Image (cartoon, rainbow, N blue to C red):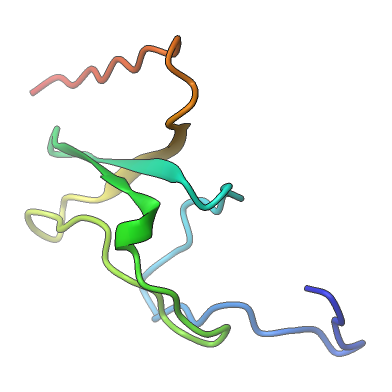
Length: 92
């Protein structure tokens, strides 16, 4: 934040029972990849994610199957990084 207050700054609202898994800086042209415990993954351009204000809850990136399922990882992939290979492995 460019001008944080001495008392702090609210950056995100987290609902009870939820948690922030990860936060990454991007260049505005990256692709986001999320994986869930049930074995699924999704990859999408960050341009598809709408902007939110500082106190917002955020946006949904992937749906989980049930209360036992959860997001287990997130990476950002730069479109210019053509020599990078992504391997997703799951027991399912």
